Image 1 (tube, protein in one colour):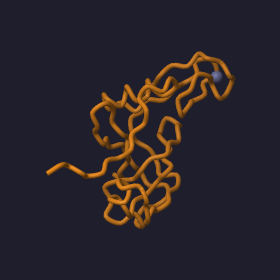
Image 2: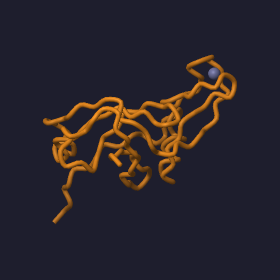
Image 3: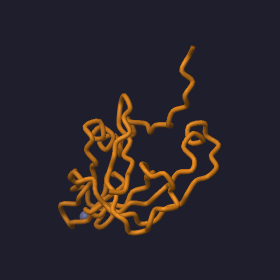
Image 4: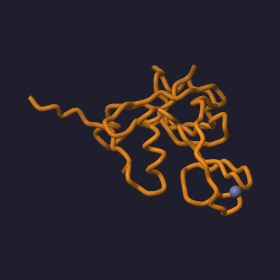
Length: 138
Ligand SMILES: [Zn+2]
């Protein structure tokens, strides 16, 4: 019997601007960029600072903790993997270091119980070439 369990569609780990981000996820490091010229926190990853357009960006590691900024509950999905996940929350999470990232909230029975502003931390969904950062309340 073949395994037909649908799996999450994964990002291209070789995309030039985001390759380093995904490489770090393999070590369960949640990376973001910091501009050493003007101090701007840059996320998603890119080649130039969004504050000063400079290219003096260095990678930092988030502690993996943050706050739920906003979310929406997905109750109907057409992709086979996401159909297995409903209902689930797609959320904007503000990391303590500043980056705001789009993710899924996991580890909750009923996503309607989530509250804006509640604390969340990263949990890793493991894959062969990279890991996907999801978040759970704590
Ligand atoms: Zn800058």
